[in-house]
Amino acid sequence: MTDSEAFSAEEIERYARHIVLPEIGGAGQQALKRARVLVIGAGGLGSPVLAYLAAAGVGTLGIADDDGVSLSNLQRQVIHDSGTVGAEKTESAARAIARINPHVICRRYQERLDATTTGEILSGFDLLVDGSDNFDTRYMAADAAERAEVPLVTGAVGRFDGSVTVLKPFAFDGDGRQNPRYRDLYPAPPPPGLVPSCAEAGIVGPVTGVIGTLMAMEVIKLITGAGDPLVGRLLLYDGLSARFETIAYARKA
Image (cartoon, rainbow, N blue to C red):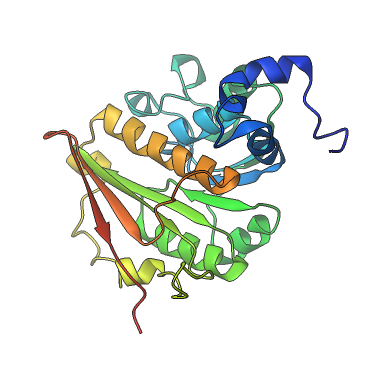
């Protein structure tokens, strides 16, 4: 263990509830401290992802978003508040993370990522989380993560429901089969205008909290090796019926 990885007494107390878990323990908490996670979007999904990963002790969090905080965001984007309306989302989120956990390093990318910039930025991270709200970014993020051989946790929400899955298409499962790609789940984006945006269709705030928290859980599992990540499985949540369903999917030839 290097000096930079050693926990202070304050960190040991802060992460005590993790350290006593056999599935995480000291080694898992050290892995969290070493981890570098890039989160696309500091909005409805990014808010709980960033907050819980910061609280969990992820050492470096990258925040990529080109938008500013608006009043209509606050109904669901809980990492921001009334005092940050008008500020850049990356700045507002970084301030909140510093309040949650001063041990976390934040790297801000106040820009809309494209295929080139995502690949360049991703080279400095171990894991990608996509909390974006558009299909172009989702496909771009999936392609970039596959090229970089970096695990991707991706989620989506709309109205009263949402979904989350984990992608590691560069790896193989326990039976020697290659894991599926994003396009094995969603072969092509829907035609423009077919799926309404949250601004058009609406979204109930806690749904973003449910899905974003599940995404943070998957990140922690991937980093620590605890449990069984949602690789090849799509977890669906229906908020109106309070029902979860899991659908398996596989790599296509």
